[in-house]
Structures are given as C-alpha cells and as structure tokens.
Length: 506
Image 1 (cartoon, rainbow, N blue to C red):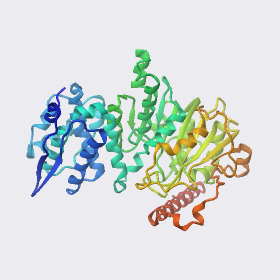
Image 2 (cartoon, helix red, strand yellow):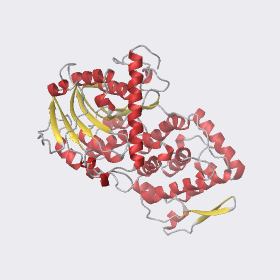
Image 3 (cartoon, rainbow, N blue to C red):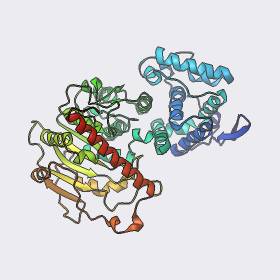
Image 4 (tube, one colour):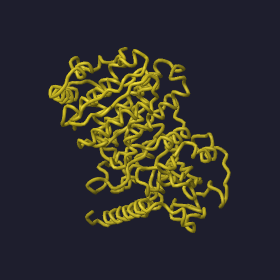
C-alpha cells in the first residue's frame, strides 16, 4: 500500500496551493487522523472551485467517481481490474493539455475495453472538464488526501458522504436519487433482511437501500464470518439487485456498491418496461420510487401490469407487490396521492390489500425530502400465500401532525423514529402485539371493513393540527408554495389518468 507523503510521515502537511488562472487557492491541508466527515468536506470544497468554471454539483460528483475509482483501486491493491496504461500513476504524472487528452481517452477506452464493473462505471462516460488546470486540481487534491484515515473510516462511508452532500444541494436536483439515510435505516431495521434472502430495489438511485440492507445482514453475521463460503458468495454476488433508469445515477450506485463489497446486478433500464418484467421475484423489496408521470405520457411498456396508468407510483406499487415471493415483505415510500387517488388508484389499493397484508402505514413528516412540500408515507406489507383477503386491518402511525418542520435548522435523525419503531414491534411482518392509542395518540388501527366503507381511501388523519390556529408555526412561504405546486401536479396527474381511461389523448 502506498500512502501520500503526509500520511507516511504521520504529521500535518503544509497547504498545497494551486493556481487557477490568476487566482491562487489553497485546496487541501492533509492531516493524519481526519475523520470521514472532514475528508468529505475537503473533496466537496473543490466543487465550489470548479463550479466557477460551469461544472454543476452532479457533474462534479460524476467526475469524482471516475477519478476516485482509479485512486481507490490503487490504495486497495485492486488495480489489476484496470488495464495497464490507464491506472492512477499514469494519470497523476501528466499535466496540461496532455492530462486532459489522456483523461478523455481513458474514459472512452475503459467504457469500451474494460471488463465487468469497470466497464459499467465508465460506460458512455464523458467529461465536463474544459480546462486542464481544473482536472489537475482534482487529481492533486485526491492524491493528497489522508488515505490511511480514509480506509480506516471506510471508503464506502466516504463515498456515501459525498452523495449526501450532493443531495443536500437542492439546485442540483440530486435529492430525488438520495433517500434520507435515517429513513432508510428505520425501514431496513423493521423489515429485517436475513442472510440468504434476495433483496430488490426497483428504483435504486444511489444504492442506499441495498447498502443499508447489506450492512444489516453483516451486523447479524459478524461481517459474514458466521456464514459458509457459499453463503458468503451469495451475499456478495446475488443477494442484492435492482434497476436504475438514469445512466449517471447508475454509475454512482455501482461505485457505492463496489466500495461496500456488493457485486449484485444493478442494471441500467426501466422498471416500468421490459427490464422490470424480467426481474426475479424477491424476498424483500425496499425502495423509494420516483414521483410523477411516466416520461412521454402513456402507461407502462410491459404487459404484466393489471392496471396500466401514467402515474408512475401506482405502476411501481403494482410491480412491487407482484414481484414479492409468497411471504415476502416490502417497505416502500409513496406520496399521499397513492393513498387517496380514485379510479385506477382505488383499484390498485384494493388489489394490494387482497394480495398482501398491508399491515402498517407510516405518515412521514414534511421537509425530509429534497422537495419540502412533498408529503410521503411508508407502506409496509407482506405478500400472501393466496391472492384474496390478506389484509384484515391497517395500522396507521401519524408522524406528520404537530411535528417540527425539518430542514437545515432542524435536522432529521434516526431518533425521531423511536416512538414509531417501538409501536411497530419486533416482528418484520407487523404481527407484534400492538395497542391502539385512540384519537389522542399517533398509532391507530382501522379494519379492512372500515377502510372499504371509505372507498378504500387510506388517507386517514385524526389528530388535531395545532398549526391551523397557531400562525407562529406556519411553514415558510417557499414550503407553502412548493406544497401548492405538488398538489397541482397530483391534480394534473389524476386528470391525465382519467383522460386516458376515457380514451382521450394525454
């Protein structure tokens, strides 16, 4: 293993200055003992430098993935997967126009001549760098990082930190691919994926659900050491799989999975098309599907969906409960309109409650996703052995009414789920002993018959909202505006769906 000079010497290094045009900036101070958060911040600070040259946050993280892959392969002794002549040292020793030309050729050749995951990460890759000095800035900054500490802390955690930073930048729009980690951790902890189970995410994003599920299984098995060699190989190569529609986001997911030692298939494709129809059935599905209507209008391009609609969430929901093995379980994030939409929405909910035991609905607070006005829920359900009458009752936990407005001033943490997790219980199938807390409590039970009388409407609320009379607690104007836009989009989606059902043009 070869470390940077500062890491080998074990002391702080002097700041490394780089000249960008007429401006000199200090980009890295390498110090032994940095934690993951500090290393992430140093890499992220470079984005602020490069942004001045027109490189967006998302482009920056994608470029970092290309360059970090080479450096991490060197630091972890896995450079044999990269063809000779395209490894880190070849890149690091070049400068000026030669560096940028070499880098462009490297991206093309690794995407066409590489093998396995290397080729997948670099497939159809191109660079946003226009000036060699900016690429040199990134290469030197990465080379100067404290890789001893980075590896001690975990390279996967370092990369996850970068993805989270990218998601926090709302202008980049990347938040739609990054589900808040406290929510993921809660969902995984309650669903309890086990060794030997197939875990699917049909809307992978940056891979958070699969990685956290893998982490959960590792916590049960002493990092897989309690498993046989065959079972270890299964966990690493076959247990986790999924689909991502956007090529650049799939790269991030592949890199994230690789750094967490996950080799399962994360394919580029459309879950609402043939790719989704070919996915093998799963023991566990954990996901946060994208919101909105299918691009270009029209229904899904697959023939195994019972209730076609342009509403992507309703099609994803059908894919999920149809894609579970008998006895399989799921936790899925869905927006409010899925709970109350009429027409196809009502039929999908009825089908779900027939084929599955929809045992728990968690009403999430606002402000935890990239679009503050979006109201979301987590649906927990288990696929039945038969296709009729599986839901006897649904338990609702209201984590939304009279909750803080989460954001940068009030961070959303795992601790906020403590009351819900206690109420849910230890059984991943939702069969733990539960207590209805009544109209003053957050946890209530509604029978299937009561829900049927409501037209299978699952948009159920009972707590008095104190903010209605307390104007001091009203959300910020931008939050209110975002919520209005979100509700208008839902209305437009419903009108489009109705139009399609009546045979009109979308």
